[in-house]
Length: 482
Image (cartoon, rainbow, N blue to C red; front, side, top):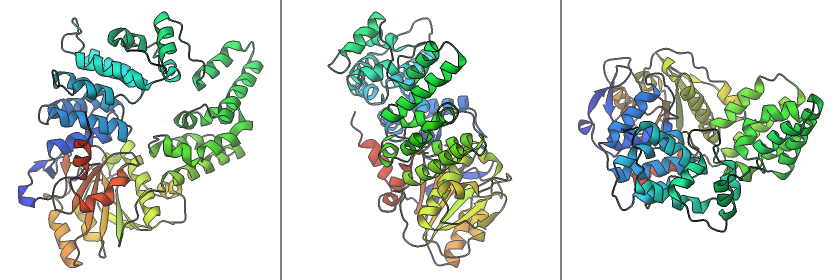
């Protein structure tokens, strides 16, 4: 999530966006945050993953390194973004050398054990002189401190065996001081005797090793799934990823899986990004129409609705607008349709879609979020922001636009049409411009326009706050102590 400060349009810098249309330039800080909260380091419609990483490197030369470090922690810890945070942490090694706070950064950016191996892998792959690896002291001290937070189970689970950088490589480099939680695991890791015996992966692997024939393998896998689900020793994300396997290998335990899927406490503590539910739903829907499949699909509907309980309720009339143009293909369309459905159901608000032109769309607010999402169609076409405000037919207090913000139809930004809309209906709505790609440009510079970014449900926590404190995001990032 992010926003820019209230300034007059004259103070905003016009630029040409990636699609070739006129836009307003984001601040370097805003652009960096947008990339951090929207990038999975994969190719996008207008930009490859390498281009994204190159842009991050450029921005690091233009923003305060301490701000960048805090933004990386924010993206990793608060929003669950992994690869892009790892890349930024690897790039920062040359920007924060000698800074007193740098070791604290490399401690706090590690949320999960394998964050260390991923950051180190990026660093080794991208260091300037590959023949002379030199690991910054701040990185080594920060990683050594991070080990204090992990126990035997976590260290065993994320040994990263079979990968170029293993956990033992990190241990040999940083020499963490063992504590009561990890002393046994670290000793066994160094001696080569650490085994991961209590994870879902290890239990399924053991079933494969112990079976002497196909029938016995099926029974052992079924038993393993039963134990994992009965004891709840499978994580929520792992559960989502393995629903197909549970249906196929342990159908008698599908009911237990559904109970876990709809457990409100598990959902809230899982750090699951909302679109993971829709991804799981799409995979399960490919299995046909058995009673087990229908049970799981029903549970996924319920789980997503449960995860959306805290979506803010807006005062007054609200319009949700989805960009369904060609450049929204892939992940942006998935996010736009899902978050659009979440907002619509929570607020019973009007919905509009736009590409070359804009139009209102009907939906049933009594449907589940996934059902509403499935009703949105991404048909392709151009990106005409102007038509949103030409077609809007009443006064709105809030307008939420979910888009890659790459408007290109017409010679100018939609500022003129937006101002005409405000004059026509005598209103000045709060506009939340939700950036789904982090391409680095804006469509509207007015004072009550807020630029949001991010795929986590945490983005909803900030929407109402932005109305009273336009600096809330920057303040939150800057308040991180390192």
